[in-house]
Length: 140
Image 1 (cartoon, helix red, strand yellow):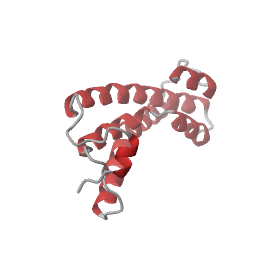
Image 2 (cartoon, one colour):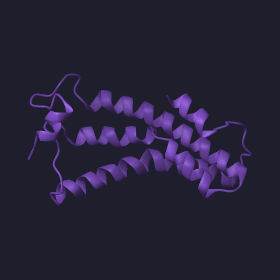
Image 3 (cartoon, one colour):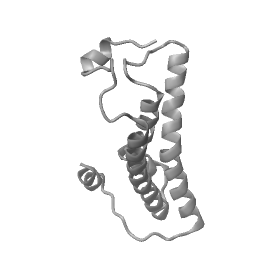
Image 4 (cartoon, one colour):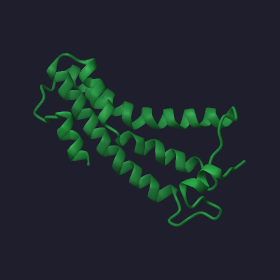
């Protein structure tokens, strides 16, 4: 699926210029995906739970939300689209693409590692077994 998405997005990976601006863009994009997405997801979830606008399904904890936030960094389609809109210089667009691809790979590896460390291997007692169960469950 990722190869299909990259091909359809017109992503061409080639040697960049390696300027200071290019490195800044690559690192900025990578940090945004690797730190910004998990932070945003955890903060939004915490606010939602704190103000009682939502509840977690049975069997879901903040550990699950942390892993979800990290795994969200894999999503690169919108990041590639925004980079096309943000930059007009081809070398900066290439640097942004490199940052997106590196961060997506890093998020995949980090998400797998965190999932193995933080989440139980089997079903948690009382956890929802289907999407319908999760929608109907409550945890206080």
